[in-house]
Length: 149
Length: 250
Image 1 (cartoon, chains in turn red, brown):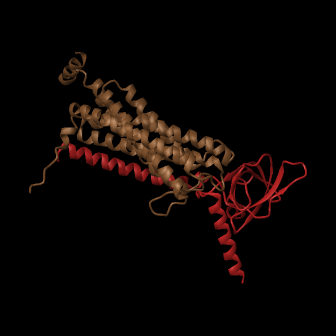
Image 2 (cartoon, one colour; image 1 turned 90 degrees about the vertical axis):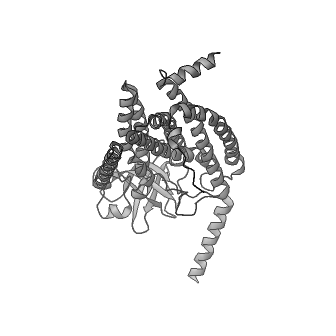
Image 3 (cartoon, chains in turn purple, cyan; image 1 turned 90 degrees about the horizontal axis):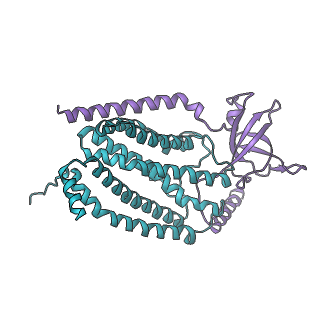
């Protein structure tokens, strides 16, 4: 074996070792690397109780209520299987919309309401002009009426 | 007909490559200017407003190419460093050193433009989700590579130490890329991938790809210019540099 081949082998084995180590570490950290919990996970008591954590999902359509004081908002976060009611005091991000993604950070109170101290909007990876978005919406509505019939 | 064998090792000689690089730089620099002009035109004038994000999405034309470059340059850098480690070719290690600052700049640009994009859309400049954190680690890897090489006096030893760090750090690149699929992140998934149809309007996609090409051309031009400086510095005691500088002086 030439020294050149020996070094190539060494680099190859080293890289493979590092890759295996990375896979093991990432697997071990899997649950800790989660940025947010879904309402289903919260319902299954997988989220940490008593400490701050984040809940992520979609803002349920028609669930957003603004309180009299002007900056308290109530809404429900859903992952279509479970929902969780959220109360938040503060300014919502511009992209906070019903039916769109959201991540709220806060604590779960004893009565199951999530008291958020930060609300972030999670937008999707689709980019299109407003006319196209309108067309997609129309198509979806048309499809829904067909299904209902 | 006997296929002609190209002697690749001819180009691995710093003396040959120095002049070859000098001839290539103007072409890549010119292409970079042209592509930037075209890409920015598409991004600011031709591309329509986004239905959800309005005008704020236009930062994508800088953000995504910068993020792509930050990951791609790291892989190329690690490749050159590994080649230098295995074959003991001086030029390979010089290429790795020349790539690092440009890669670090694109990483910083991706993080910075991402922060400016995150505030109006998500509502936060920074969150510790898997995508953002792993990209930040990439910046630290670049800085670590450059600092490590700067602290070791002997260039050959610096090359070897840097190569080991660069190769170990390469595991971070797939982590960055797949982070949005493996974990719940605030960062959205990929709009453009090799396996799916792109999730964006054609003009937007075109603008982004042209900007990515511009960043490629820019990177090649800048890295070639930088590697020329490194070659001159490291080969300053050799006969060809003395001869060349003598010729320049006259």
